[in-house]
Image (cartoon, rainbow, N blue to C red; front, side, top):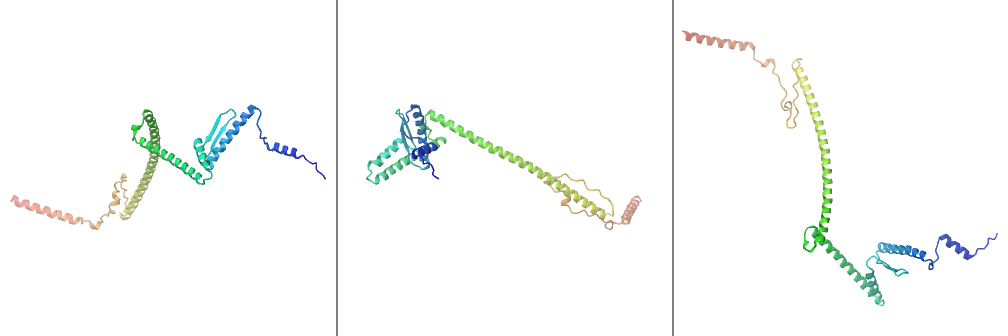
Length: 267
């Protein structure tokens, strides 16, 4: 089975159409040419920026439109990059020219960094209220506005932390009150249980007589209940009491002596 032969030119044209490629040639339509220029210029500037950021490269881009308008981009400075290019190409036969150019570039970068450090140090002094004589009225006003803004942020953060601390302490106070109520309830239960045990022991010792338990004392955290400090009450038995007859006899003898003394005085 034979397949029909295809013209290579037609196949290439179909491939170009399928891929959406545009033929690279001058655009005759002025409007289309201007639109294409703006789009391609923006894309080129974007690629130059990405190259400088991703690869840490020094990039300088100069574009002139058909009307002579200048468009440029540089991550450092167009003039500095051109000067570096000139110095690097001045003596291409000398292998040390590139090294010298790089050395000079790094020296410039170091100078720039030192200048930025001095500016930051001066700003810190101004914030602390030092070296204000070098500032004019406008600079002092800007410094005042910056300080007021910073003080506002500091106060806002301080108040936020203070409110959080107050909220925490209030929650802690409620928790301590609940713990205190729980402990008081436990102490009251222990006191009632102890009084019941004492009343039971009194009933056993008193031969069945019922003794009323002592009134519960108000709780005070600084003092312990008296019944916890004193030993168990010991009630005297009947054997320890003096006989009633001896007491009566002693009283009778004393009366007789007093009567006899009275009679002698009357005689």
